[in-house]
Every structure is written in structure tokens, then in C-alpha cells.
Amino acid sequence: MADEAMNEGNFSHNNTVAPTVHRVLPLFSLVGRTAIVSGAGAGIGLAVAEALAEAGANVAIWYNSNKKAIEEAEKIEKEYGVKCTCIPPLLQSSHLIGAHILNLVGGSGKAYQVDVTSYEAIAAITDEVIREFNGRLDVFVANSGIPWTQGAALDGELDHYHKIMKTDIDSAFYCARVAGLHWRRQKKEQTTIDGKPFAPAFREGSFVATGSISGTIVNIPQLQAAYNAAKAAVIHLCKSLAVEWVGFARANTVSPGYISTEILSFAPSPLHKIWQDKTPMGREGQAHELKGAFLYLASDAASYTTGADIVIDGGYSLP
Image (cartoon, rainbow, N blue to C red):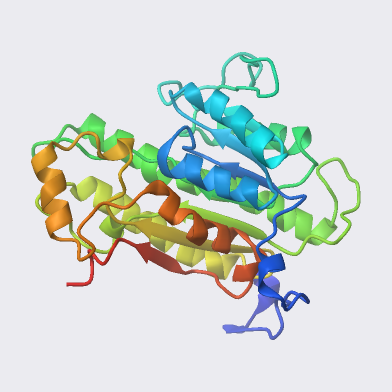
């Protein structure tokens, strides 16, 4: 599709079509659509899953080790009347378990094991989610990430570096590739994964990755060169995919500042005070304060938004 949109270095005209709905609130509706959110056991990912479900999407939650996500999925199903499935990635595993998918939990929610640093695992479980829901994929939020916690780059362990890169940028690339392949096929063939015609027609997919202000600034006083580099790569990956995917999908990032979630638990209290001192709003953000940005990018309200990086940091990166 992207090749067809380019002609001797210039873009062909009218590669995309604007939504016909002009009222703004209906553009935020995700009713009947399927969304996957990785790293959604708690914190930002869980808040995003809640937002997409509130807008009407069926949501598959991928999580690492927080088994409370299963309960959260059941709450989402009951509160918003959508389907919500829990899928925990095992970061320590390099292969899919058993015959690719292992059903762990009964009831209204299900849990699966998959390694988010394995392309094969992501591809297999994405196919399974699509088949289990309504045969389509509309939104993929790549939120999995871990912090660098070993100080200066010259002193940290190489194994820690590799873990950061595999989790923070490799998994984002793998998720994007898997989602993009589905969206390119859906746009071209206008059918579900099992060959049934879309009604209405599939417009485009939306890939949203969680970046960070660390992708554009160098944080102080903590030292985290590897994490900064990984998040910079995530942001530029999505900018690049925005061009490659024109016509069948959009790609954007949300870059939070210091958000009060478990990912910041590695830092002692004095460090949190320093971050607040350097933030004009004087506090850390809350995960639910990111919901609006993710929902916007996931929905048709952002139909003319691609390659964007939305910074939400209480003004931290302004001074």
C-alpha cells in the first residue's frame, strides 16, 4: 500500500479518506473494534485498556506477572459490556509454551502465556486474539517496557542492557510488524481473518506505542542511557512507520513524563522529590491522565494524525 502511495519520490494524492462523520464525539467511538494492549497488567497499560473499553472496543490485555490483571479484565467486561481477555507475557521464556497457547484461567476472562520479546509468540497470540474476538484487529497499543536501574552506562551489566532493548524497542517493533501485516491485508482484502466481508469497510489500523520524554531529553539526576536510547528508537520507529503505512494504518506515540506507577518504584523517595521540583505542575502524573491521548490516537478522531508524539509531562521538558 505504501509503495502505491509513492510516485517518483512524491506522494500520490488522496491516499486516505476523511471520516464522513463531522460531529466529534462519535469519532471517539470504538464500538465493534478489537484492540490489543501490551504491558496492561497495571499502571498506564491498564488505564489505556479501560479507556478503549469505555469507548466500546473489545480489548485483549497482555501482562507480565501481575495476576490481578485477570480480575481487572473481569471488571472491565462487567462495567463496559465488552469482551476483555488477559494475556500474560513470560519475559523469561524464549519460546511459546506447549502448542503455542496455554489456557490458564477459566471464567469470563482467559489468560495465556506468551513472550513479548519473541516475534513468533506475538504473531501467534495476535492471530488467536483476532480469531477469538470478531476476526479483525483495529488498534494495537505497544506499552510493554522496563526501566534501566544500574546507573552509568559504563558500569551497568550488558545483560541488563540487552533486556532493556528486547523489552522496550524490540517488542515494539515486533508488535508493529505483526499488526501492520494484518492491517495491510485487511485494507486490501476487506475481509476478516476467516474470509468474511467487513461491513462496514475497514478504514485503517491504529498503532500507538508508549514512548517517553526520555526519548527526546536526557533525564537527570538518574543515569539511564540505554532506556533513553530505546525510547528514542520507539518514537522514531513510529514516525517511520507512519510514512510506510500510509493508506492502511496510522502510527503514533504518547510520551509520558513522570507518572506515578510501578515502573518508578525502583527510585528512592528523594529522587521523586527532585522530579517534582523540576516539573512546573509540581507533581507526578496519574495513569488516568493519559487516557484521553491514547483514546484520541486509537480512534477516528485522529484520522489526520500520524507520526505524532504527544508529550504529557506536566511541563517537565519545557524549561
